[in-house]
Image 1 (cartoon, rainbow, N blue to C red):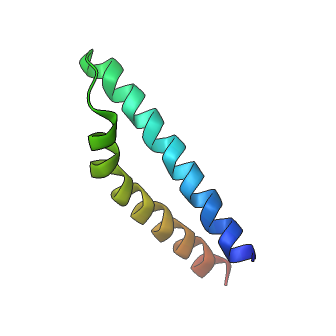
Image 2 (cartoon, helix red, strand yellow; image 1 turned 90 degrees about the vertical axis):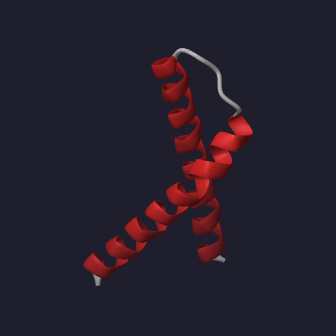
Length: 62
């Protein structure tokens, strides 16, 4: 059960990070881009980076 809660937390945190990146990109280029396509191209990389970070943290703690 703790694992499922941890995964849900990761998904929410990564989504909020992707939304923040989207807002920063819109401000930087001064134009709106398609949010769905931005999520499709960014979200998998963000999930991968967070999972690698979680695994590294577990490795360091043990």
